Length: 286
Image (cartoon, rainbow, N blue to C red; front, side, top):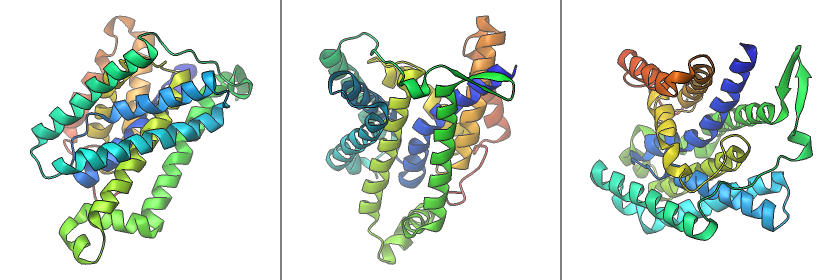
């Protein structure tokens, strides 16, 4: 039971790392971005390419994945997404899902349909004995990474000038603009940062989920569940929701393999019936 719980928490941390950027952008911009998984995939492929063909180490490859996804997100935000911020949600859905299918086609053409090869660095390979349990080092690293990102985001959004501007824009964009905040630039930076986090999560998923061209669509529903159940526009909400989804999914597949991922959808429906605005409804970004 303890191992199942541990694996579920590690999986949940990975979902949090990818989904929290979507939560911030959706909560701040009210933009329905179904292309978030494509940015995670871009980061994963950037890290894989750097390690397999450029000889870059695992940790520098993670930094490159963040930068690559952030740059791609910045370019798409500047060229396409910002033109639809005030459009109907259906227009946003059509554009973003179009980006997903284009990214799948481009990735398949460039890298082929097969899973990307990946080997863990020696420092993260194998198991370590902790509290009488044999725990995977890579999963411990995922948990530590999720906690570090959670703490950094809460600190940045609650204790810095940038965070104050984000909270002001979340509460009321017109008032924020009236106080001199450049809302469009804030959107641009926040969107790019959210895409970078997705890219980091995509690179980390190489050792747990694997990476193939269908990744952007295959796991999209999980990212959306994390945001919807947790509460769009919050940090703590997706964190709790990701842990819940990760534990339920891993435990369900372990104890009830015939049910598959069905239990995740049951939990999602029940949670939203009780908390229709998410586990932690938005009151700023706490």
